[in-house]
Length: 257
Ligand SMILES: Nc1ncnc2c1ncn2[C@@H]1O[C@H](COP(=O)(O)OP(=O)(O)OP(=O)(O)O)[C@@H](O)[C@H]1O
Image (cartoon, rainbow, N blue to C red; front, side, top):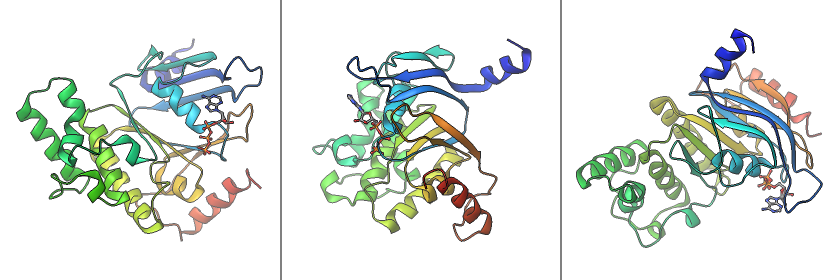
């Protein structure tokens, strides 16, 4: 391997090569020959039509699913199970949060499992509850919260475990348009404040362009892979009425026409 390539591999936090996936011994691959390199601190979008395999790819990176073929390295180690360096945020906060625990208890759950002392748990939950904008709601139960607030709790709980990488699977897909827009703005702020690496799955081109530094467009399945990668040169906060935004939107849309 040449020196330049070695340098890229060293700085990349995720490196996927020749990855393929089928289920139940089926000869049809859902994902076929996927290559992907993600840099530390990057905000990367996986964009593709429904059913192309976005969630499957994210679950492989999370270590929930073992890939059928190819190689996946996170922090230069082969992935074969979930790890503390990866935190997952799901679309449905309702199934991710514990309904019998308060906001504070939900956020502290992982730390409690790790036997982190109470005072540190409290300091950590308090700072992440503040970061996601839920100060004053610590004692509420999930059923007392709106959809957007529940997603904030899920995010605070994942951040409290301090993973380097956030894997987000259409986290705002179930929210109304206004809440979704607020959450997108908040996520960019939180990403900037925490320097996390984010891989964010969506099928919404506007969302992809509002959030990502790079957008990996997945082809229609089966045998899907990342067909084109767009570098998004727009500064944050992004404006979807911007001319360049509109131009990029149309370029990406043309993959699905
Ligand atoms: N555990 C599984 N067993 C069998 N097939 C599966 C399994 N998980 C996913 N699939 C199939 O793999 C394909 C990709 O599914 P996946 O959920 O990854 O797509 P997606 O792009 O995330 O879709 P959406 O945007 O609708 O959530 C689908 O055809 C799905 O039926």
